[in-house]
Amino acid sequence: MDDSDADGMATWEEYLAGTNPTNALSRFKADIIEKNGIAYIHWVPDLTNALPARTYAIHGVTNLAEGFTSGPVTNLPAGTPVPLKSLMPNRFLKVRVDLEQH
Image (cartoon, rainbow, N blue to C red; front, top):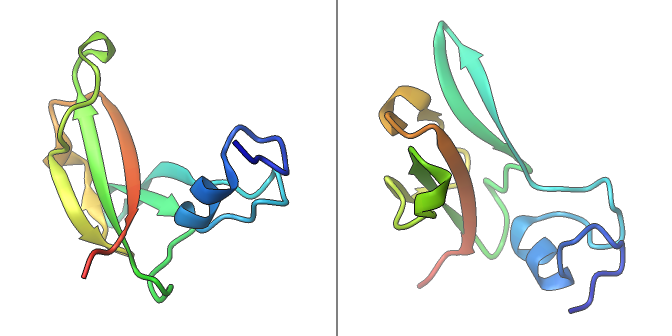
């Protein structure tokens, strides 16, 4: 596995996520943000106009021992805000990024 910046992500994974494979500080990050009193899950980098286009999935579980299975929200285009309330009762979340399939 080629990981030129030694950040734990292979170069191909960094390409997929839209991060710089030669900069260990460039990373895909999911956060919870608040807008107008509503909590949303948000991630950076936002690859809204990237080519090839990406789609995202948010997976959630109430217990990490269960492991992550299919996501409650899938095939999200880039830049799509997802209200945290729609992902409940899940307490543990992860965001997956994929290249859009044509």
